[in-house]
Length: 178
Image (cartoon, rainbow, N blue to C red; front, side, top):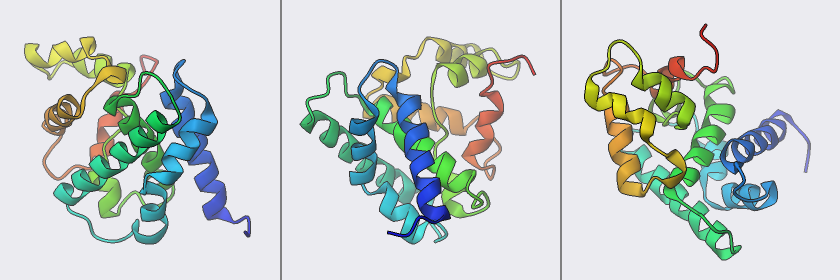
């Protein structure tokens, strides 16, 4: 295999995704194998620039998350959750697509942002959110079920103008006050 920019970006995206979802969970090798076997890598390599509707992305996302969970369960990893699988997919897409020069494509527009405590806490205290949404600070992303995750993404989508890409939510993903 030739070592090119696509391979370089893929390796970094896998590492970033694994580290972001790891938090005492499992090793990077298990997470890498799960990402590489779930279908998202193939999709990004072959179809990232293609048109994709939000509903079709949700279906792709679900399939990839289930693939990740199956891989990790098969490796005997404890504590596998939809929330962790979703974060792996989100970081992989953020790194390889949104930050990989394809930020204006449909996939970048509909891909879910990495959901974690930092994003949810910062969103929960944002001045424009109501009391119900302030409860986001108590959500444990590592324990989200598929249904909880889908509901949360729907709520997060409503924070943005309808045509804004979902990655714009990451305005709130900061560990500083700036």
